Length: 120
Image 1 (spheres, rainbow, N blue to C red):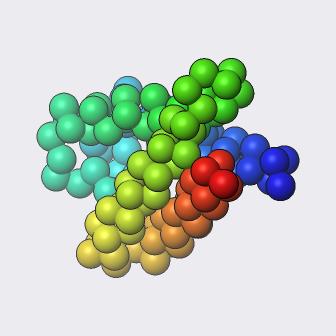
Image 2: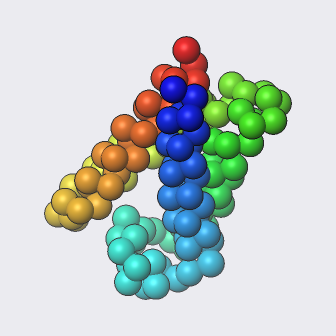
């Protein structure tokens, strides 16, 4: 079970690290061109804040559990990721983007699984 949780944490970390780096350095138009359409009509400061939060979350899903320093932060991060994916799915639903909704739901399931597995 521990191995499966680590794999899920790795997937979540990579997904949010990739998204966060893009939101931190790319313009709104470049993000939309890459398929990150959830940033439509957001101010660049908000996009950057989301990006930095995602990069920190990518570390938060791995580092606390790995180092055993405040390991409770790993399931807390997973719960935060799940909330983010719920909100992102709503945005993509309004934009009529079933592929992005499927990605959000997949990441949501992984995040809930990690949160549950690491809290038990």
